[in-house]
Image (tube, rainbow, N blue to C red; front, side):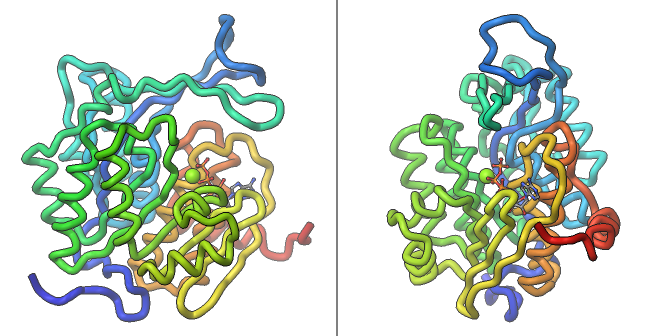
Length: 333
Ligand code: ATP
Ligand code: MG
């Protein structure tokens, strides 16, 4: 079992312990090219783009040169291979992505409304994405992992709870750390077993990466300070709150730190939270300070929203450094 190989200054397992892994949906995203309400008429579309919150998260880690892999399932079709080829080319471990002969790859059709909100048509639970299993390859990846990241969105997959809990216990026993993005879509949460597993991950996570309302849902209270206090008291070491174009904050035993967002023109916000979270986590696993991790994460989130397509904005440190340099000295709003 060995002692916890946690980096004393971060509370998050050092990269040397093993790759960051996640479990969940791989999808293609197909986007409407016009603004409007949903899909009840024929219209121009663009895509397919590689997608799925867990897949975007892993791709961003790979771009940063971090060890990473994903447990997932796709169909033996072009949508599946589009994703596998992208993740592999970017450096992620794709050995635990099952290619299913008899299920199509999952999909999400998205169209933006004038107010910036989105209409979706999802095909997840009844696609290959909904058939993630604890295969031998998944077991091997879990055994190698140093950090488990759990995506709330993945709880749309019926059998995910048991796999997540298995990975949680294995990674913990080895001294690894755990993070959670509670981006749960209540309408997609697949019943009691998923709920219980999610609650256990919430209770055990070292790092939480919520957006505003998710923070309150996780803590069960409607005041930010109270929610933070309650989650820190329950054992989270760091809580990073994502605030869209208002930036982000990190809360820990050593207090609070706020950073403004970089000023960019938002073209497509999908994936910002995933790239942000992956960058924060990877920087911390590399031993960077909370402030430095938050700055890189802010830059990764900002860059993502300037590119169309959920996984098209992932980027490495060189690109983040030149983006940050280009932003320095810009007037604040
Ligand atoms: P999603 O679930 O859609 O991926 P999220 O709600 O999890 O997103 P956001 O808060 O929207 O996450 O975005 C994450 C981070 O990305 C923000 O905290 C910020 O740093 C950056 N970001 C997002 N939108 C913008 C923007 N319009 N301008 C600059 N930075 C942005
Ligand atoms: Mg989110």
